[in-house]
Amino acid sequence: PGGVRCTLHATLCHATPAVRLAAAACLRALGLAQPSSLGALLEASLNLLMVRHADLATADGRGRESDGGRGSDALDALCAHAHGVAALVSAIGDAPLGCASELPAAVLSSASALISAGGERRAASCWLLVGALLTLGVEWVGHRARLASLYGLWRGALAGRVSKGTCRPELEAQLRTRADALGSVGAFCARLPELVTPGFLKPLLLQLLPPNLALLVLVRAHLEVQVPSLQAAARAFRASLYALVGLLPPPALSAKVLNAVVPHALADVLLDSAGHCATLVRSLLGAEGVTGGCALPSASAAASCVDGVAGGA
Image (cartoon, rainbow, N blue to C red):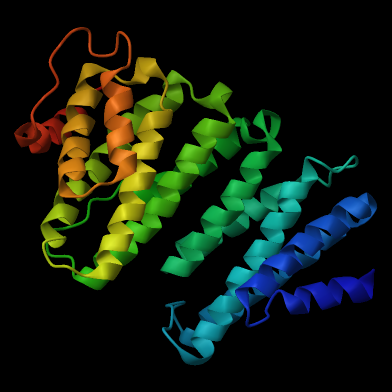
């Protein structure tokens, strides 16, 4: 098994993405085939991930990502090992023996370290690990300290506002990173509805939703310049944001929330034929008892509605 493990870890860094994914799947299969070795596999994979993280931070001085050369190769390796760790974490729930409780906690700490270092690809690796941890279920995720750690990650990625003077490359990176973070929150709501309590929803609606609704206005202004990469990033961001809203329980869709969200969705439907926008609008308009018979606002009210959500829930 040691030779197989070393081979799989080496194959995770293959130049072909499909080979990397196959190696991650094989790691998971090996952990399930030999449940007693799952913990050791996860520990080794996590150590390799953090070694890559440390090497990358040392190589570039401040941990900043490089667009090419050795920095890019190091980032590729880091992301590859993140896939391996995520694959093994996702196997814990299916393994009859599970693994030591400190290992998932170490994965969560590693995810926090990755996103704290900055950089788009480190952030993507962080959300990959978080997504795998969500498969551990309510018993593990629902611990108060872990919920606080998860919300801290989401708040760090989503609570800040993007200034109007942000350059296009930085805006694209923000959109992609926020799309991943919003997708993580959405996965939490979909997988663990028992944990979507009023105590979870209040900070979500007050702290995380308003800055990202405001970002939609900025994005539409930038989309006047036809740049394919920006358009793709904007579509991913809108899809994740509206998908999250669609996953919220009906009691959370108060008139104030609807007044903030629906104008943006309507504006995006007019901007392009984005199916996720149209689907969201139809579901919100058809939600029984949500609007209380009140008329929904026009698109011109969007900016003021965003500020309204920030003022209270």
